[in-house]
Image (cartoon, rainbow, N blue to C red; front, side, top):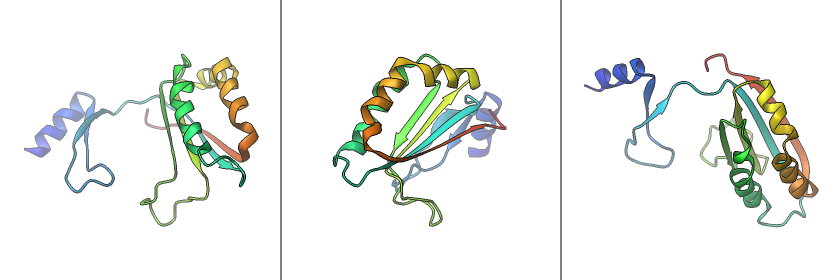
Length: 139
């Protein structure tokens, strides 16, 4: 039966997702297989003297401000996963992933006043920022 449901979901452009992190039971959610192909990832390393709540503020402000920029198609922000793979880098304080339809959408985002306000409000606490952009082979 599960195979039939999974095949139907694939045919309709959706798929079943397995267990959520940290849950003992299987939590199946339907999600779209198609996602915006242009991906902008940022890893924030904060200064040692940054306020204790700065990582939380970066995350909250990303959801509050950056998500409002018209070319943003998806946004995720959070702290390193404590239960990730053993080889995963965990020395940063905040990871940010933003999705766009294309490079033009990213450039509009980078020049947008809400993005500039976000950077201006937080950059004094940055020790290092790593940025990686890539185009998904399977949008």
